[in-house]
Length: 264
Image (cartoon, one colour):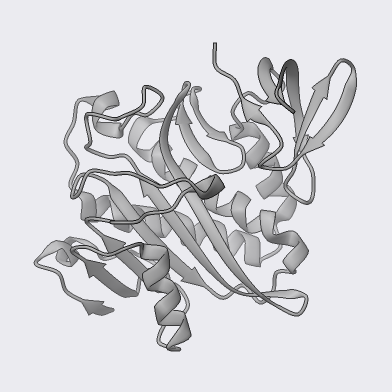
């Protein structure tokens, strides 16, 4: 394993993987693990599965351009570099599905197969109606194929206090305090397992598993569309990764910026 050491944290991080996490950079602090991963790619020094982990992000990014906030040293914040040249640019959501399922697999290994442990479209990890973590994937496209992918993952582990009521952590749910390196190693193993499943073309299985884990799937709930509150039912996700909602007997396809989940 090619490791740049930060104190003794990496000593407990030895994932049983072929390539994911075998090149590892653990930083005490950085602007963003996705940004650091991008710098490695630009310098041609990132191998397949290169992983950047930090104890503190000063400018972490989330979906919709939001900032990802996490208390230093209490959570998992990492980015993995893959080169999925086998994947067409139009099929980017297949990678998103695989990554989200890997995070769900990993969370299930901590909490068990809890029915309220779900994936909120497109790729947030939820326990009931509270967020446990999020994923931000940044792809570079060359021609019709994806040249490189940076998979950024933030997971609330030991943090107890949050600025928003809809956030929680594994520590709050279980009453335990977790050592981060073993959790990171297990996460990297889950990620590689699902990535290899994607690379092998097992798309039907991935899609079925994603729908089984999907938050609010086939249930009626309120949403906000074009500034109006509506009742909708998630029926599927289309090939482009858009959410398909049944509203008033009709099916509508929504992109990330076009629909908001409403919580009563």
